[in-house]
Image (cartoon, helix red, strand yellow):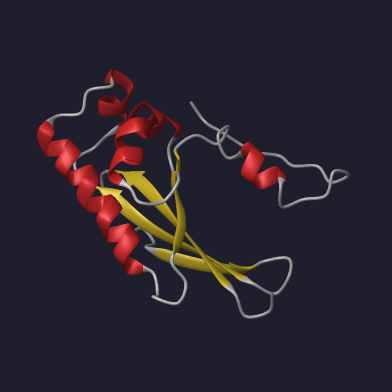
Length: 132
């Protein structure tokens, strides 16, 4: 594999004082590849909105914009492989996000289990933390 880069988009909810949150980070993979995470905040979408399961037209447009930004931010030679949600509450909008995205969407850590487990040997243990 060597110099390969794998890009994953991370959707996050709006938070107070969130302007200093990271927008990108990368780390080495097991086989010399680079795993790059690109973060994008859905403006004005909060945990309360997700818990209620209500997505107004305005917030749907902001979700669409955040997904579009994620899909357009990665380098041309290494496209975005998928989008995950930073908050488990985003699972309520899995269907909407999947409809708006051209790449796979995994809003829940439980949905990520099969993809994560494929990257490890059967003898290795995996621990996935989830909140809420």
